[in-house]
Image 1 (cartoon, rainbow, N blue to C red):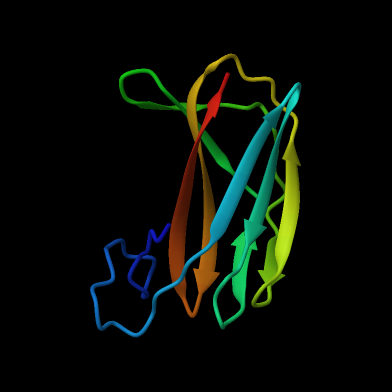
Image 2: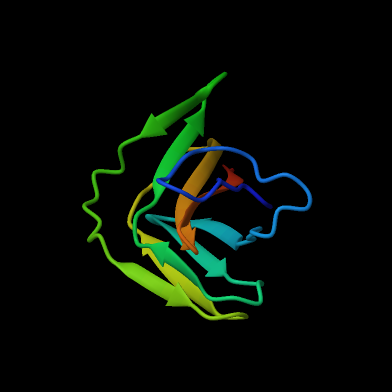
Length: 120
């Protein structure tokens, strides 16, 4: 999934074909009883920084942001090409449709990466 922003003072936009900066992150989400497990991978040829925070949304006809009541320490993690990290979030979700949002930083660009998942 490629969700991208244009570099420069965190301005938002889609990077069009032919623009040199394009980044991809793979996020796999597995809901388990009492927690969400995320695996974030860097399939790019350059290093990518991600931050520790996640945003969680539930689909109820529209995407509503949830407050998982978790305090995230604001720290960056550098993912080298091919590296995967695991992140566990202590939250118990009822059945439904959800998405997580992570932010990554490459060459001054802030990239919003979303991954939808279903809890059954």
